[in-house]
Image 1 (tube, one colour):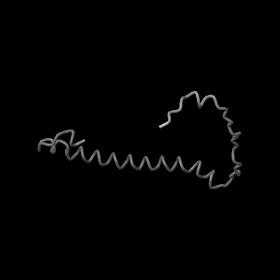
Image 2 (cartoon, helix red, strand yellow):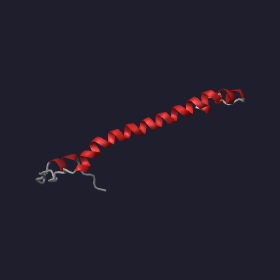
Image 3 (cartoon, rainbow, N blue to C red):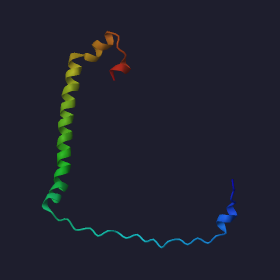
Image 4 (cartoon, rainbow, N blue to C red):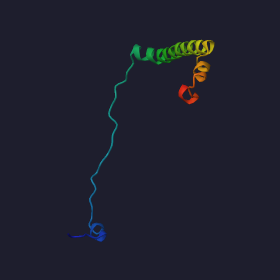
Amino acid sequence: MHVTSLQEFTSKDVLWPDVSIQMMPTASIDLPVVSLMKIGAPILFVIAYVYFLQYFTIILVSEKETMVKEHLLMMGMRLSAYW
């Protein structure tokens, strides 16, 4: 097994290739659908979040009214298992 020293690698001249990076040309997109999505997507997300929040609030209030958590704790369930 031949062990090469670091000096053998550093003494040789290395020619690095000439590499350049250039951005690819992109076409300008000016469709009415894209501008509609810029306005419509945030509104859609807000409406979806409000719907989820309403659904979550209804479930939470009904759970508080029926005292599900308290009944499960009386039966011996741990609080960490509930959450």
